[in-house]
Length: 346
Image 1 (cartoon, rainbow, N blue to C red):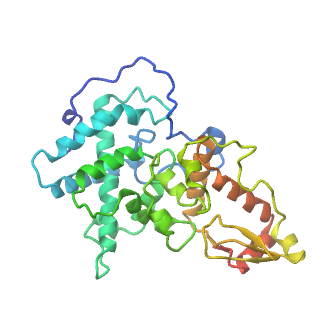
Image 2 (image 1 turned 135 degrees about the vertical axis):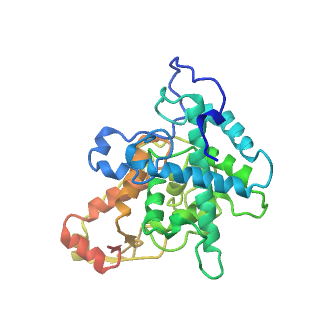
Image 3 (image 1 turned 60 degrees about the horizontal axis):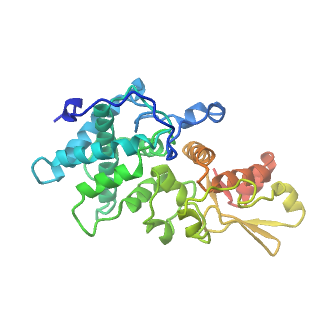
């Protein structure tokens, strides 16, 4: 069954302008940031949400979204299984719209609901199938063409972490709740983090604190961002939704010298296996975890930075990490020192 706009009866969106919402969490990347590396902020294979909807280069995945919707519906063994999801998304539609910084007057209510149903079901079913395939005792992927296509999965994962390519997390959570009947099922936050893990710029397993995160997040990129926050940060500071004062509350306000000058001054540069942001200095040793650089690293870090720059409530840890790297790496000699110390692995 193909999902069409007629499946979603309802009124057109009120075309009268409404006041800007104070609840924006999904932004268009500002032009001055985007112009540095345009491709880093654009999805390659799949459009999620309204910003890149109907881009010709991404239309091929629309058929796969419909196929995943059907696959998810087949797993729900009751009549009118799709009706509950459509009704729930229609109810959440106005709140979901308010999460975006733009109005999208060209997308009416029916189209918007259809979009979040298909996009949300695609994401939830993809992450569930991925987790199921990794639980297979024989290590075999679930039978799914996307998993069997080389580089398709990492490209989709990359796209799901683009700032402009997000759905509100409460939409995904509602779809997950309506389609998951096992009380012992892996929670959505954990499913998402395990799905994203292969693209992390720090290899190795998440901490138990990250994987057992039961907090509420704006979207998948925000959840991914939260996994980098050091474990010694007071959770209540973040949960209160306090705005970060860029003068007083930037973690790590002091810059460091470049690697070659530190080395000449007798400072040892060593790596530790902790969180990517757990950088420590003690006994004339500067310890920080290995940063793995591959084709995915640049776009992921750029979108995390853009998220922090656009959302004043997001703790600016990735921004500070980028400033730290920019301070300690001045030229190829500094890069070579860090590579020899296994601090950067390229």
